[in-house]
Length: 87
Image (tube, rainbow, N blue to C red; front, top):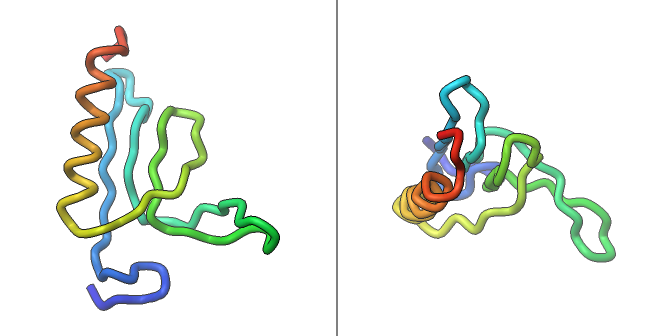
């Protein structure tokens, strides 16, 4: 994919973990913009973000390379599997 303002590295990704009844409880993606507070300038749109729970609208995620989201996602999956009784 060509690089753009939304996808500066040219890599589009979406990684999600769902509980058996289909509810997403963890996600890493750059599929849509998320508004983040940005100091004095108000709000800034970011595309690389993660969702830490079913109700989390997303927090900024620092994309370094194509391997980093995979490593971080599966580390968070391991944590979720150890703590969430519903999975």
